[in-house]
Image (cartoon, rainbow, N blue to C red; front, side, top):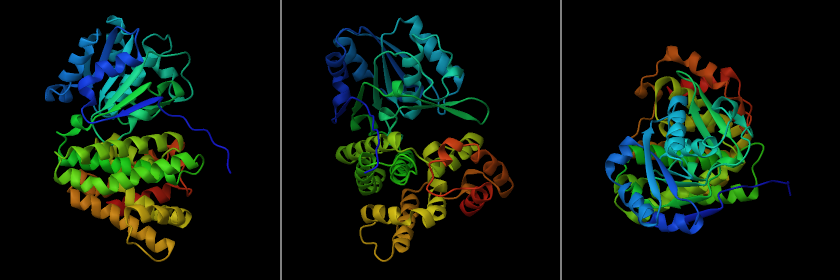
Length: 385
């Protein structure tokens, strides 16, 4: 058996309604902390869903400050504004409450608030030094899995992004409460849910670090997500369906944090960065075409996943791979999200720029089960157009 290492968050609570007693849960884990900073975005704050968790934190003796300046694909100035806010409030515990962007910013606040390291020096793998503040993550979407990953993505220019990957970014505690996701619109539910499915699929076929634990998590994640995504989009008020989606996204996050994602994400990043398309939708748009490209190298593994997502599929590994691809395309169509690059404003003359940018994602492309050239990337974008 191949040697491997596996890391994840130390403590996970999966329970509908858990956020209403967040203070109790956090106090049990961090008895000496006093000044909590909640990192979120203005849109989530307006829903009123942050009020109950913050109230329970105060009941448990925490002084609570709220930074709500997070935006999608957070740029460096937003990250540093959150760090400055944390320092000004003498924060000794950080809580990410929101989608992937809020949780990514929370990770960076936790590692930078008490550190002298500049943000620019921690981009890359394993560059964070020293310890960090206690970190709690509470996701409000079922997609990124950021609550259990050691990765934070920052927008560093007009269209460029950089990643911070370090064991210090793993939270101490993740709290999964589907009650926080009940208000998600169907389009957001669909895009984030497909993002989580991509995490599971790419972790299962990751070239270098695929391992028995990540495989088990990826399979379980895909089962939960493929069974519950359409019901969650059709009737988002079903708490048990929402909790299954949240757990599926979490399991997929644990899988890809240890067996990293690959070409789907590499090709999705330029779509999001240049054309400001939401991350989950960017993944969904290129997913079937990357799967088809990878099939010569990964059909046997895709066939194993087809047995989960499309249990009626039969025939050769190649036939079952096609069934998996068709199922992913059908899922996107049934949810009503866009299915072509043209629908998000991308034209044929944009494909060369997209291909050039995709080839810069060397960290991700190295994980792909099949080597990809610039010509391959351009052809995939053309197929997705």
